[in-house]
Image: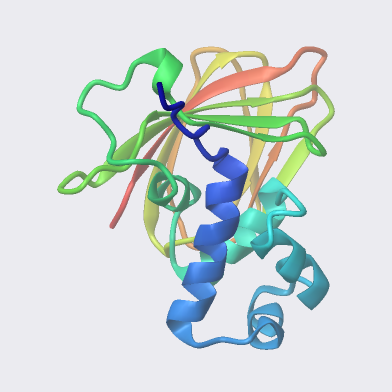
Length: 191
């Protein structure tokens, strides 16, 4: 009996997709480095799968490629089913920042919204320099813990049950002041 090959990891598929996106645009690593503000050597290692991107670096690349992080991660996933079982939801971790992102309802053809569960360890900060898609609508509902979200230079402190909704056009920052981690639901609606 023939064994099925092991499925590629999310990081392996993400590395390949990042390389494809750059190639589709005809950009050199040097040109992408200038556009994204990420070193050429880091980009090279990311595309070869030698390095897993941090949330911040992935955010910078998403901005350059005009994609939300969810859409990019969806592109490395097989065609998503209508029912997304918990065991099938794509989970991505940034060990450096303590950020975990679960794609609860991934982007799907014909749908503009997606749902993400995020967790951030106490004391952790994740910053994004720009909106991946200017004007993207976001709704953040805190389920556990406390988070400080900075949008348009305004800091919003959210606690369990609180919801922040806005259109993102610039930088944003998520900070978990603690003492415990924060868990939130994020709904993203494309313009």
